[in-house]
Amino acid sequence: MGILSIGASFRRAPVDLLDRLAYGDEDLSKAYRHARDLEGLDEVVILSTCNRVEVVGRVDSYHAGFLALKRLLTETRDVEADELGEALYAHWERDAADHLFGVASGLDSLVLGETQIQAQVRDALRRAEADGAAGPELGALFHAANRAGRRVRRETALGAAPDAYVAHGAAAAAAALEGLEGRVVVVVGAGRMASLAVDHLAPRGVASITVLNRSVEHAEALAARAGARSGDLATLPRALAQADLVISATGAAGAVVGRDDVARATAGRTGRPLVLLDLAVPRDVEPACAELDGVTVLDVVALRERVRTEAPETAEQLSLAHAIVTEDVRRWAVRRRGDELAPLIRALQERGDEVVRAELDRWSARLAALEPEEREAVEALARAVAAKLLHDPIVRLKERTEPGGDRAHAALLAELLAIELPDER
Image (cartoon, rainbow, N blue to C red; front, side, top):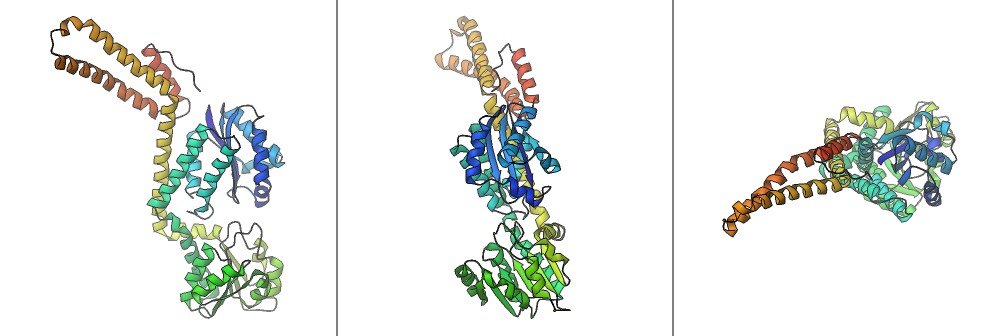
């Protein structure tokens, strides 16, 4: 059996398709019950976030598994197979692990290095286990992916990447407005990104900052830190009319800054531009706002490339993070292959012990004259030689991690040593 993942993400799938594919709590329970009736699928975990829906399965084979996982998506989300089209991707065996480890590490996120995805990967496994859908194979895979994510955040600076997005966003906004000094700023949201935005703008000589949020208490707490104003999100349409720069970073599922509100706010303000800096994932600012005269929209998609090209330290940290992922995937693959080959490895070690015992018995008459300590030393030497001869073949056997290759090597080794190869699980 092998591991296969299929899914769709923000990279190739339109937002409306991702919305339709997304699973709620009740949807997950139904999907896991449905998975039990699909042939070729032994274990399954569904990872559903704002920007991706992926299904990871332990399957009989690539072809049968792909059909089963695709059916699971289409039949439980009421989506036609041809609607998935080019948006659907698939990863098999080691590539599936490499992809999941990268996801858990924030390397495949819209905001590079975001930390929320690691908790989402962990929670996806817990939910699948609670519904009896995930077993030891996928459990080991997901736990290893989360360990890689923790290493990336502990050993690189990618966890601080959102700060780079805010800094570059502020710089881009300053360029569009020909400077931030004396500008009126509205910050929508009161979470981490909004807090970073306030921290970046407060020292830049802006005329005022107003923090708007659905929770007025949270808005007041953030505003108090920077001597800013605060208010309810319901006042946003009025605030837009006064603003030069709007920075939006909420966790809303849909657009917060709509085209109609922006059109009304900018009517008649000829020569006075408005910059909308959208730091939210998914987007807070309706894309159609960019069609309005005098309105500039900057979002994390544009900022991501800017961060990569203009921040060499980020590129260096990204390279280090990918190296960590590669190393942890290799460790997982070797461990997994070692577990699968454990019966054969035990048989090899037992065969070595048998040979040692047989030879010691054959030489027992000549060894009889030895002192007990000397005989013990000879026996230890014989066992050590046998173990050493088997050690390197066993290690190399575990390292043959590509699909199919390891079983061929295992079969050959078993045949050469006249050992019956255990059936593949």
